[in-house]
Amino acid sequence: MVHRAVTVLGATGSVGLSTLDVIRRHPKRFSVYALTAGTRSEELAALCREFHPKFAVMADPTAAQKLAGLLADLPDVTVLSGESGLCEVASAPEACTVVAAIVGAAGLGPTLAAVRAGKRVLLANKEALVMSGKLFMDAVAVSGAELLPIDSEHNAIFQCLPAEKIRDPEGAGITRILLTASGGPFREHSAEDLLSVTPAQACAHPNWSMGRKISVDSATLMNKGLELIEACWLFNTTPDRIEVHVHPESIIHSMVEYADGSVLAQLGSPDMRTPIANGLAWPERIDAGVAPLDLFAIGRFHFERPDLLRFPCLRLAAEAFEVGGTAPAVLNAANEVAVDEFLKGNLAFTDIPVVIERTLSATPVAPADSFDVIFAKNTEARQRAREQIALLTV
Ligand code: NDP
Image 1 (cartoon, rainbow, N blue to C red):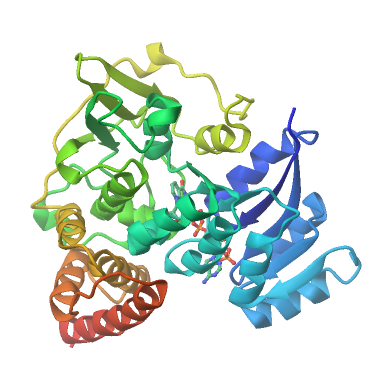
Image 2 (tube, rainbow, N blue to C red):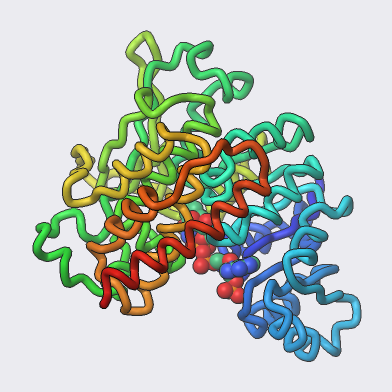
């Protein structure tokens, strides 16, 4: 059995806690090298008391000071802060595995640090890949990092592909990727009903328990749009070879169609511990603590096409990928700002795609030829998205 020291970026979040639950079940196989969070120092302190990492990092310096006080009786845990602290633990030689589970664009720098250091990187932070696409995959190729998708759909596709053909689906005889989507909590809402939905309703996902930002993305179908782009980069394919299937049961996590008509699928309960355990132990299989699937209880599977009129975010994401350059980074930035304002009660749900579309129109596309360009566009697009929101809410 290989022993793995693990750094969990975003340890206090939904994916971070699921990761730590898998690690907790396998104390001989995994140890925790570093845990990180954004601002919630008390939650991170509690995790440090259980997992005894060498490093604990808060992105926010004030929260880091508070964490240092909370851990004063644990001198073996060193507290760091800021992006530099996150990048330091993501690239430290002592940890071979990094779980990239920070939410949003804030995850790009630390995830990239792990990639550049040649780690096994379990990628949940899809925004990092959406923003930087080819640059990110080139960095993986240069460093020899082992990039394992733990987004459930991409992990399913990964499991359905021959290991040596992950980046060559055509060479593997693959004709289509069938990307499944739950449809979110508003799948059956009319366009009129969508006008008045609340953040609490948007965050109440029917099948998955997730952080607030991805829950809203799931409700708008932007999550599927980000995942479409993510799949194109991970599996070296194009949107015309990916078909989104709304599958409200969320049991089939995605499928791969081969030239001979075979369709391979990965099924499981909607529980992130399955793809996380798959990535942590790959190529071995370990207990994830997930209840066995009871297909008799589920009974039936349903499939429908996504409705791009009620849920335009999926279309916007596909278009941004086609435009290329910095357009996906702008899409992502505008979405993050709009979702944040929706969650604060300052923007209507149906205005999220409006803000994204107007921000894309207002932000000139540049070639995505360096990470500096990506970071600068991210900042510029956030400003432009705020301007669009101000115009909509006067
Ligand atoms: P959560 O909101 O639950 O957790 C986010 C984590 O990131 C927390 O640890 C948070 O710390 C930390 N964080 C937030 N802002 C910053 C920042 N500026 N700098 C550093 N750390 C920060 O998110 P999820 O776990 O739901 O999602 C994480 C990522 O995984 C997202 O990219 C999401 O799209 C992806 N994903 C999530 C799935 C899920 O089931 N939840 C499924 C597939 C992918 P703090 O607690 O202090 O705020």
